[in-house]
Length: 567
Image (cartoon, rainbow, N blue to C red):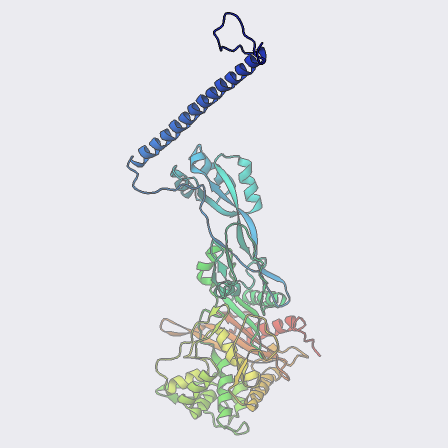
């Protein structure tokens, strides 16, 4: 042993012998190197396979891109239909008149439908008015994944369809406008389309003032309700009495209105037959037009209130007696009264007797220019609108000469919408202030006032005439009287123009009323279209026999609701 090194015989000089422990370490290192080589090989194989997969996908994409597709096509299971969430509509006391509700709509996936004819036939058993041909057309295109079958089913209808168990059908919740009062106030409320967008009436007003919100799905509006001036209870009473009057006098239609003369608030607005906002066919029924605002008519002797007011404004002394002849000739036309006067008449006498000849003489005294300007000043001949929409524009004569001045003085020759006539008449009653009619609840009784257009004394004079016309048995309106309420008013019976001239047996019978006349608050207007005579009216069709008593019944019924009890 030299320096700790063992020399082993038989080995070359300098060769070293590894100890046993060193041999084990060497073998472990070699095994590690082999394992690492294997892992690297497996990783390379995995990367190669992934690269091959990506190359395959890329090749497929290139093949599809070069396969002649010239336009981009996107397939979706259902369209994103935009609807509109609408706030509630309530009456002046907070009672609900219109609201959104969630309803199920029936949809289909044409690709999942097994038998199109079976779908149409079985659906028709639970939906009798279903358009089977339309369903077949909707399901015919197998490339589509969505088709509307029926929008907004009732809960009962949806359950019946569900129970059929037809493959390919499904339900989708949507908003639908609901009108719990049915046809009551339907013309004023208006209606919406299939997507809940307002088309007419107050509903359209909501859209114009941007009170609706576009939504996807059944999302209810969080906006505050729109409060109207209408009173649901008063509205129902007016409609009920008008329907009874139509039955009693065999009338074709009827109109009724109650308005606050101080601020223009419309408390009730009725046109019978009414319109149900959710019944589509009602919108196209000519018998269901809104005669209160959408039609213009010659209303007859109710216009004599304007004639008397103009005469008073022009300085005719109410005590002065005017020689009123039995007949008056104007431009080769003869004007006469059914009951000619037997002596001179005052303005009051002309009004109470409803004399056409006397009214004609008063109008000629003022002249056509003054008459035209006066009616325009009251707002009778100028364009007018409410939140429910535009009011049909008045139809003045193309030529406004002496004969037109005469006929207009007693309500012929100038056709107006009853609502516009009522708004102009309110000026005669409220002290002379011109008002704008409104369906919105106002704050304060004078909120609707504009400028004063006639003297307070003129308004006071007309109020006295209207009260005398009802309180006196000599007046034409005594059948409208309600004991203890001081009702005032004026009758009007206008022949309806037709082929060959005016039709003597076809009239519009009207009554313009107001109460209480000592301090007027409410104006009423009733128009009966083509009433017939009966035993109660002694065969007559004039307004004093039908429109006047109808007004009396309405006022007696609604006055307690409006805070007025007979004294």
